[in-house]
Length: 217
Image (tube, rainbow, N blue to C red; front, side, top):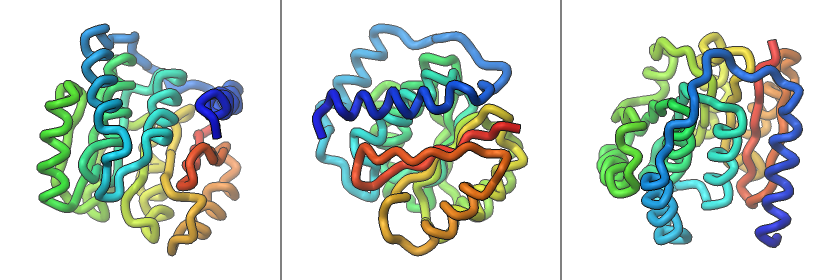
């Protein structure tokens, strides 16, 4: 798929959420041109080199564009890995005046992620925690207006249930790898698509797939 076609798909995805109320209490743009140049250079230089279960470049762009378009400021990421998606999310939140809390259970990946946040220049916009998301997610006070899940797929539905009470109306829960045959994915999609208080769209820009469920009431 060409870059232009991918961009058209992203714009169509954002348009699909135009009728969903935006989350309240959103901040104003705060990103600087210097940070923009630094993050873009880091991401472009590292493109295609990410391993350790990180999202592809295209999916990072999807998350970034959604956050900026909706003005999200209170983010939660479940599964940092070494920080690729978190950099995209934090970069977006530097523009909206927000901050990301991200959770990783593996000490090595957590340590590398911290280094990557510093290199990319987004460390001030990230609260990175070394912890077990099974326990921590349900303990976080919130509220959140954006959640991205890219940890153990069999736990996706439980993560959603745990964070749902603290996801504001207009907020979105995004999940990765939803087009792949992994344990727990079908159950998760069936669950979120059956929720009448959420509007769910699947982005197929990459082979992995991203579901985006926005809370309508």
